[in-house]
Length: 113
Length: 112
Image (cartoon, rainbow over all chains, first blue to last red; front, top):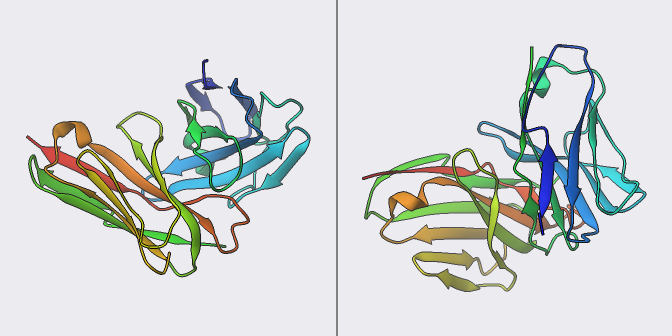
């Protein structure tokens, strides 16, 4: 099993550009989530999904969209990139919410200039 | 929303010294998880605590869950250079509706 995969590993965007961060998992997990990690801020939840077709907002959803058309994939879309979105983005999956181990992908380091 | 405070933010130790990081919540937690993130890497699950007063050990690591289920600690005995990284607690409970809320993390540096 590959676990959780993310692409790309690195990305540089100009302000106003849009892009999609890809995330896929092969563990048949129902729960998937996106976090951003900034120095001193820990991991903050952007959006999450409890199953195909179901998504909801986390702590910092503004400027990001998600969809979940399959169990395996959970892409994160930046609609109009801003310098404040410079961060490291992690996708995670787990067998359920709250009391289940979360498996993290390797991360995408995004810089917005 | 639920907040989990983690202290200290940074800890520098000499190899062989002990290390402790603490997590505190104002609300009662359903469970708490601990993760380790090596420099440049991604968070990796270490353990989950569920019961009031629970203590679990993994070699040199000791994890505790408070009696009131509002705080937790991770203690490393005799640190090694391989312990370097950021340690996060992640809690579920209160108003989080099953979602995990991460603490800010403690960055551990071990000097040989």
